[in-house]
Picture 1 (cartoon, rainbow, N blue to C red):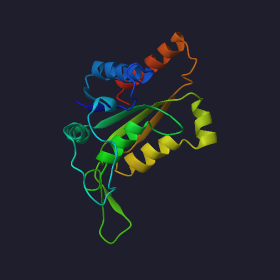
Picture 2 (picture 1 turned 90 degrees about the vertical axis):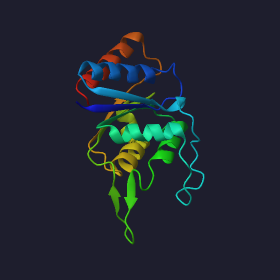
Picture 3 (picture 1 turned 180 degrees about the horizontal axis):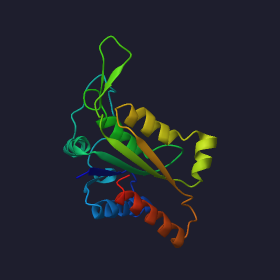
Length: 192
């Protein structure tokens, strides 16, 4: 049985991102997958990596529980909006505090190389935009995807990482949103 972890990075529980996360979960459960969730905005933690990697800050209980979920998952589904080309601040803080040396990756002594400690996991980034996905890729270079996919997940060994863009959210009608939710439900059924 596939273990799926849905990580919702939108801070507003009334957002369309919550509908996306819920619809993916319904599809995955219908397929027989074991599904857990993390709603980052509901966690109690400081998102500030105050000392960088120079001094370790104790992880709060919510972060420890989140890390256990990440370690036990086979497939990570990240749902988040793109704001100013990047991730919401609380989502970035969650990554900064958890994806640490010795946990997600390990630098090799006297080397520029590192060990990827999350090998064997796959991921799917589902991100919402107020512009077409092709525009975000071609004109802006998709910075949030580069950050999460390449510089975080793949850096730590998670591969492959699929990316799906949903948008233009701004001004979308109920019929369009229903189509997007049906698409996400299908992703869940296929455990993509």
